[in-house]
Image (cartoon, rainbow, N blue to C red; front, side, top):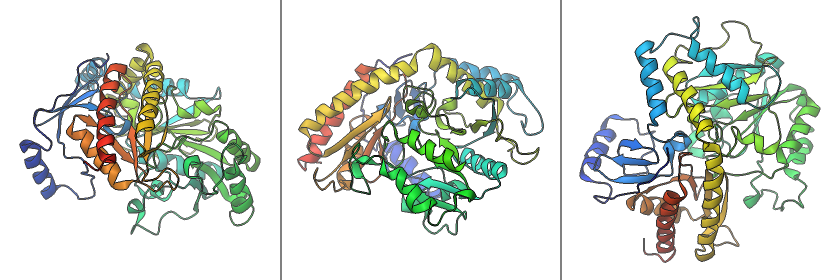
Length: 448
């Protein structure tokens, strides 16, 4: 199932129906929800989405990296229908059902590591992180956690404590979970130490040891590092290829576990099942959500069996491992494997990176292009030497592209991210990039 037909703008967004629905939304829905984009989604098919006014968009957002198999993939829809007709729900916490067990077996098979593993289910990415934090505290008896500056792990209290991607996410919610500290992430384009890779020798890892673990964070009290293999909300920050091996060596030396948050980058998005596989490291636990069930709510943690040793009743949820969601997940994983979607992510992703770098040769606004597979971003700056974030220009690019039929997402201060369905075709991506290039040129000239 690949995208063929393209975008169509019938009325400049926001159209009349969209405007009316957004007014209704404003009256009854919490203002905490983002409403950056003037669009009300009505339906979707593969890599295209239609709004209530009949406009058709090329979807490079995929509901924030959720729709790995595209909108309404027939095999996923059929799996949902079949399971819904049989059993919509029965609590996996206390009772057992086959879809939950079968999915658990599959997840243990496709996650890195030949060791025995176990799965704990949830409904959202934040729930998965919460479960992982509780699990490592239970197993190790240690209370401290080290996470990374710029990371995003969710908005519930434990996950929120590990999150530092934006001030608005944490402001006014303290005090948060005690015992969590934040260390620099390898954001090489904006290195906090003003060094350059590889001459830096990955000093950002040495810094953790020399300034944290040797001075005020007793390593004997640290249960785990929590990290994203590629930071999502901060702007698709891709670490150097040898970074995680050095981090693991540090962690192993102190007996600290590794929790790998794959919520945005996992399930084939980067061209491998899990982004950490690009780095040759086997984490102790992997958190999954978003793309696992093609839009159905499902999340969880896959961990070494020896560390998922908490006793019965310690952690579960009524709706975790919902059988319809599990059936959708099993179908999603089958589609990704059988239709070669990870291979397609690599092919289309490499093509997209080349195209964007060509655009960057003409558009000075683009300071950096980065990514893996179909997790791609370009960071906009006012000046390539000072790297001052081009915040307004970024927003203009997002809205300008939307009005011409391309859906994008913002990340960080001034980064545009692209995380389309893994079914995206080269042809449709080229159409989208042509639109983005035109908008960027107009923004650069001050015409938008």
